[in-house]
Length: 250
Ligand code: IPE
Ligand code: IPE
Ligand code: MG
Image 1 (cartoon, helix red, strand yellow):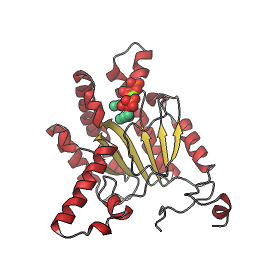
Image 2 (cartoon, helix red, strand yellow):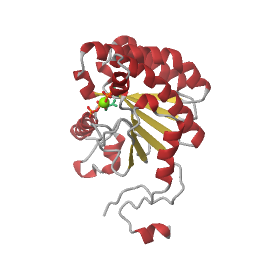
Image 3 (spheres, helix red, strand yellow):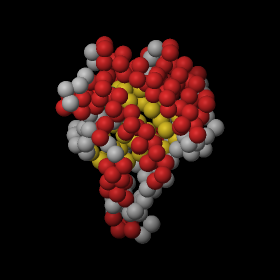
């Protein structure tokens, strides 16, 4: 009988992996009678703060949802403002991330991005590849269903090639084909902006994540709000199907 691989955790622990749905930039801008793109711009400082705070608190993996597969449906000027912002943010932030020993990785349908951004992405990944500090993953043009479909295709190809038997497909082999392959599942998912939904983020990997939602809009997400989420996480008993008594005797 297979069981979820993560071990029950005791209270008071720091999540190894935090994932964040950075939502609310548009509303932040609208509240100030500004164009939506200024909300996205204002959100960059919250990204910087999250990276610094995660590293300081001992989080090993931070995964940020920056642009979903569905966000391609937004007005063309917003999409292009976001793409330019990604290029600019990489140009301005990568040296500092590198100095702070952060290892950067991008996941998603990156081939859909324009060439300028793809080049920036691969250069920033190469530059930080040997770093041993926080593992920062940015999801761009990412969708959880797309991720699962791509993993299924990869497994199917292995079966066709004769390198994998259908009956050998299991949780572990499936996970290994996903975009976050090699990383532990997120322990804590934070979503800003008031909505309590997953919006096609890491559908497979969030199976046992603790979910934490706040009305705070992404540009206003600060250290105290991040710490509130970590504190709430630390108060949870993660049972993974066990009983509370079983967890207490681990
Ligand atoms: C999140 O903020 C950023 C992206 C999805 C790219 P939104 O732009 O969705 O902000 P709201 O939800 O409209 O306020
Ligand atoms: C989710 O936010 C995607 C990102 C934060 C990148 P959305 O604003 O796109 O989500 P919905 O449309 O409100 O579900
Ligand atoms: Mg939104």
